[in-house]
Amino acid sequence: MSLLVVGSVAFDSVKTPFGQADDVLGGSATYFSTSASYFTDVRLVAVVGDDFPDKHIDFLKSKKIDVAGLERTTGKTFRWKGQYSFDLNEAQTLETHLNVFQSFKPKLPESYKSSEVVFLANIDPDLQREVVGQVNAPKLVAADTMNFWISGKRDSLIKTLKHVDILFINDAEARQLTGKANLVKAAREIVSYGPKTIVIKRGEYGVLLFHGTSVFSAPAYPLEDVFDPTGAGDTFAGGFMGYLTWAGDFSEATLRRATVVGSVMASFNVEAFSLERIKALEDREIKHRYKEFKRMSHFEDLG
Ligand code: AMP
Image 1 (cartoon, rainbow, N blue to C red):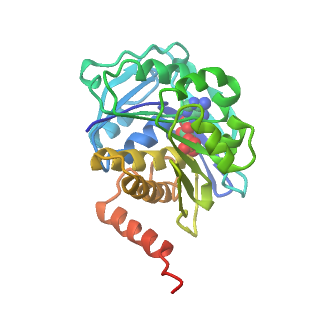
Image 2 (cartoon, rainbow, N blue to C red):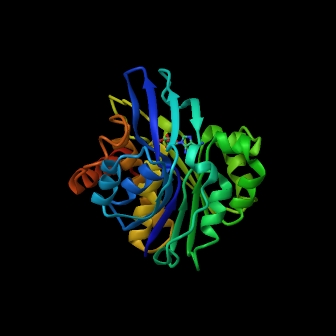
Image 3 (cartoon, protein in one colour):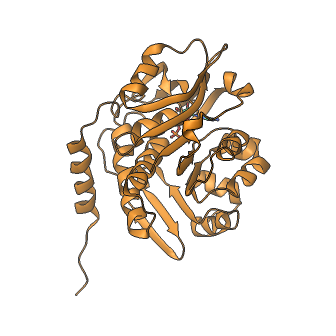
């Protein structure tokens, strides 16, 4: 199966208690596709400005990411500026400049229209719908979003969710979207908007997967040095969706493994700024950390 993603490709400026990085490669679709590329072929839909250097496009190509749908136009690339306090769980957005995304009218290359799995990464929900509407017969549609769109374009987001099977969202955003403080109630409310499966990301406390009547809980990897959480959510979703696409089935057992694969990929990403840690991972590192997750979460019957 093939995996298509639409989302932001960005320049990020990030400050954490441990350092600072300016105008580095970021964006929801960049993190997602890099992470997913370890498991499957990825087709990218996004727009960048004429200030976007070839070296970043060459990097995406080096990960075998299909960039036929990455438009380059006159203007400035999307820019995001954020900071984190000692509680690294929540980013504080300082600046969002949509720039070339403001007038982006995505037109899918013919070769993308047969994609079976679609991921609507964090971007304007109008764009998310425009892209999914151009795919012929998607078997699975997943999406992510953030506070910026929940407060700025709620009605459009709710419309997008009608087309979505799996929603990735963090705990604060789930509460903001539904008005429910309790995450179990929030997940149930989101199911009434369309998605059947809800993945609630809880930063250093791990992930909750709600699927039908079952709930699965995965921890976050207890890292001693978390450097920069930017992109953790997108990297999680990339590992999750990349693995799911590779596995080719959407059973509960596969969804659970995908949740752990996503957690593994996110755990690497937070070890460095930008994509520095996930740009050149080795398969054995991914498999080794997956085993560590299994060992860390395993327990015996009470007897
Ligand atoms: P996360 O995985 O939630 O940490 O996502 C961080 C990435 O999201 C950064 O690389 C930003 O460039 C990107 N981003 C931040 N705000 C927005 C937005 N409003 N729309 C799309 N992408 C965004």
